[in-house]
Amino acid sequence: MSYNNLLLQINDKTALITINRPDKLNALNHTTLVELKNVFEELKNNDEVYSVIITGSGEKAFVAGADIAELNKLNMIEGKKFAEFGQSVFNMIENFDKPVIAAVNGFALGGGCELALSCHFRIASENAKFGQPEVNLGIIPGYGGTQRLARLVGSGRAMEMILTGDMIDASEALKIGLVNKVFPLAELQSKVFEIAQKINSKGQQAIRLSVKAVKAVDKMNLNEGLDFEAVLFGLCCGTEDFKEGTSAFLEKRKPAFKNK
Ligand code: COA
Image 1 (cartoon, rainbow, N blue to C red):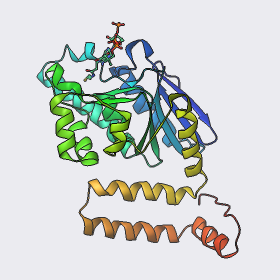
Image 2 (image 1 turned 180 degrees about the vertical axis):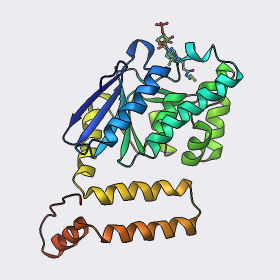
Image 3 (image 1 turned 120 degrees about the vertical axis):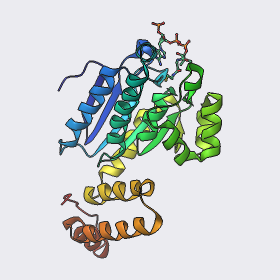
Image 4 (image 1 turned 90 degrees about the vertical axis):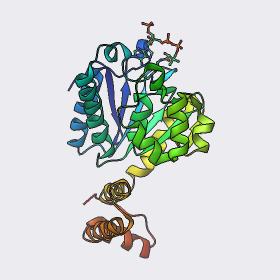
């Protein structure tokens, strides 16, 4: 499939999606959201892809938010639909069965911060800035920010970011757990690629079931989550990779996973 506002490169089982509207700081207009949905459909069905990285084009922005020129025209009903559509795309990313990593290379504001939050984890460059500045526009975050930010960093930190609209820098984001690691901008892509390669080298059945199990934390209470974990653990024990991984350990050799 071809895309107008996204670049898609696949190398060594890792798909790199670059949001590509640099003159608008990669703001998410409707076309870009539709393309994001389509690219995840495409990658879901591509057995050659084990993990996905999302980044922004240029050296300034990951994504500077939803497109304010489109926002400006919405009435009440359209506003609700606008939020629901963005949420559906970000839900698809959050529920994607292969790992999705945000490589945040600059401004991640509004919908950009929410896009990063829908990824399974986030790595940032030193120049990255995070914020939910929607109140400056007379709106609230609508692509999941009120829910996912509070779940990730706690309601107090989320409240402060959402109510003040202030940006935080990469070191503050690291401190509050919004990102896992910070690298110089020039190294960001290669460092995130290294992490993806490490993930790709494992048995992919176990990787995908790990994603499913950890994401259940937002959907289940502890007892339900533990039951779910035990079921997924049992499923792993039925895979060839489980036999290979445990046998390789006992035979003191490297496992040769077949992802079966
Ligand atoms: N929607 C639409 N266009 C956007 C945008 C957005 N969210 N963010 C930036 N742009 C556009 C600007 O309008 C400008 O376009 P132009 O050159 O045609 O005028 C271009 O991107 C560059 O942005 P600019 O504001 O000139 O860059 P800057 O370095 O001075 O400021 C920001 C950078 C990120 C601080 C500023 O662009 C900003 O505040 N953006 C909006 C952030 C926001 O509120 N996001 C939440 C939306 S829900």
